[in-house]
Structure formats: structure tokens, C-alpha cells
Image (cartoon, rainbow, N blue to C red; front, side, top):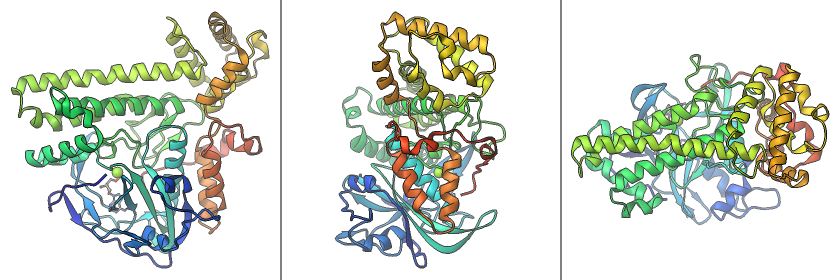
Length: 488
Ligand code: AMP
Ligand code: MG
């Protein structure tokens, strides 16, 4: 919804820079529905002028005009260190359509590009496209991807690649970094305008709270706590959880060197550039909490408009404490579901912790393990459970399965019912790195069919789709080695 703040300190009017001879790489008819865009039989917009618009080559498509595109200013903490002003260095907000903001990523330089070229390469644009849409189909809040438009324009990264523009949709692209930006500048009037805008458009319930800004912090915190619990439940690692990449709406955003875990490793690092593992799998909850603390401290001046400084600080501190409660509650609920439990029992978390340790020790494929739990028959002996073959220590896993089956029996779990339930919460298909890589390599040779096929498979992650069984398989050891860095 409309980013209605204006002024040179907030945003800059920015025209996209055209790309030569644009062509469709990918188009999401599912995202198109969000904005009421009609699609033809080939799955592309009926109106061909959308190609030029989504390439950044023109500002009009059919009856849609985007005459005031902007790039916005934000700041942020990167890898735990204050990085000062960042801003939309390669994203241009075209405007609003049906309650969604339409943004072009990679559409050329902006006022905030610093040393960058304002571009995005085909590889990273396809990854963002596939993952945004896959995340949505998993039921996890995310910005959406409408399209990827390519061009043969060469782009220099580690090697020479080609340019692409990814069109993104979200009710708002406001990040924690936007709040930090005005707060560090002690521009309280702007900070208040921003908070009021976010509240009015996205958290109207806060406006009636006793302390609206405190309530806003709590609500943003709760949405992001819940988001990170959902990531953990599907083995998703974001890769760069800097405060400028954290949405004020609790959406997964700014897909870069992300990765879904194949085999389970509690301290898995998906971003090759993150040597210290700041953003590793098991740290994501605490890092998200840290980012919410950045938000809380940015919002302090607004609370101080109403309270003594000490009281304001104490209120924000207690708001921050709520993060862990929301996260833990959500994480436990999601993993109980993954295990197929309908009730809550005292020792459930001990059982889960034992399992996670065993999965970690044997590096068992996370997604297919949980999916496979649906095949367990409670009347059969544990030696018949095929999943046990993936574990090095058979004695310990057999003991675990014995306890698991007892736990299922204690709530009179019915096998067929549980299988249906487990299959609704444990996806069969996730965007594994090697699948994305295969689609990218074909796309780099101008064959976009695999991007389309993969997107279609991932749009039904919980369905069996037996004809695509190989897409559910973990990578072979040689394919596991694909490294993903920040370069995009
Ligand atoms: P990211 O790590 O992608 O979230 O980006 C961090 C900051 O760098 C943001 O301000 C981006 O807009 C900016 N940035 C990243 N890549 C480029 C690029 N190629 N050109 C200009 N700015 C960029
Ligand atoms: Mg970013």
C-alpha cells in the first residue's frame, strides 16, 4: 500500500534504466492474480506491453501508469555492525496496484547505489523468483515475485554474467532499516511519520492500544518471531539476516545466498561468505531477536514522547522478552505437527531434541525424513521402518522410533489419518540448491523451461506428484558442493 512519505531525506524520484532487447524468463500467474493481471494460455500477460514495464523500459502498461517511481532511503546493521546509510541501491518502487507495491529489482542505478551497478544477474533473479513463489506455496509469509525479465546485457560479477530484472510484489517493502535510518539521524518527525504509516496501513489494531508505538514493536516482533519459527520448520536459512533485510511486516524478503537444508546440520551455514556462521540455521532465532532489538532501540524516541526515558526503556525491554515466548510456542507447535502429534504431552520436546541430535549426527535429509514419518505403521516392529536405514547408530534410532510409536499410540493415532496430516505439514518438494542450479544453467543457455517446470512443482509442495519423484530426492554428494555467496 502506498508509500506516502515524500521528501529528499526519505526517497528519491528514480527512473529505471532500460535494458536492451528484454525477454521473458519467468512469469508467475499466481502472483499476477494478486494484482488482477490477466494471463493468456502461454502463461504470460495478455497485454504484451507488460514486458516493457517489468523490464524497466517504460512506465506504462495497458491502462496502468507508474509515473512517479522512487528509491527509498534506509540504513542498517550488516553482520552485526552499524553500516550507516544503505537504501534501495538496485530496487525501484514503481507504485501501487491492487494494494500491492510493485518493485523492480535490478532496474539500474539509484541515488543509493553507492559503488554498485544497480543491476542483478540472471542467476540471483531466478533464485529470488523461485524461492519467493515456493515460500508462498509453503504457506510462509514472503514478498512475491511476479516476473523475471532477462537481457543479454553483460554484468560483471566474479565472471561475466547477464542482467535480469525481478519484479516483486508486497503490501510494503518497509524494513527495520527504514526505522533505524530516521532514528540515528534523530529525525523524530520522520520516524513518527514512518511508524504512523506502517500502523495505519498494516497494523491498524495498534492505533487503539494504550501505547501504540510499543504495541507496534510487539506486533512486528511477533510476526518475525513466528516467521523464523516457520523457517526452522522447513529447514530454510535466509543467509543474510541484516536489519535492512528484515521486513516490518514479517515477510521473508531480500532473497540472496539463502538455502534450504538438505541433510540436517544444526549449525548449517548456507552463505559461503558468512565464515563465522552468524546466520547459521540454529542462530536464526537469536539473530532475528537481535534485529528486533535494533527496531526497539530505533523506536525508543517515539516512546519517549509519552514516557520518562527509563520507563520507555523498560517497556521496550519487556516487549523484547515476548519474542522468545512467541518463537518457542510457535516452534514447538510446528514441530509437534511435523511429528504428527495432535495433542501436547510433557515429554514431547525431549523426544524432539533427541531426534534432532540423531538427524544431525547422521546428517539425515531433513525434508524427506519428516515426510517419511507419514509411512510409519504403529503395529509394525521398528525394524520395518525404512527411515532407520539413514542413521549410523541403529540402536539409538530404534530406541527413538520405539518411543515415538508409543507416543503415537498414547493418543490413539490412526495411521491413515496421521499420514494425511503429516503430508499436509511436511513438504515433499522444497527448492533444493541443486534443483535451482540446474534450472539456472539451462536458463543461461536460454532454455527457461526448467524454471517454469520447477516453479510448477514447487507450487504444490505437499502433493505427491509421483511423476516428479526425482525432484524430491536429496542431492547426490557431488551436487551438495554447490556454494552460494553474497554475489548477486
Ligand atoms: P543486500 O545484501 O542485497 O541486501 O544489499 C545490501 C545493500 O547493497 C542494499 O542497500 C542494496 O540495495 C545494495 N546493493 C546490493 N547489490 C547492489 C548493486 N548491484 N548495485 C547497487 N546496490 C546494490
Ligand atoms: Mg537487502
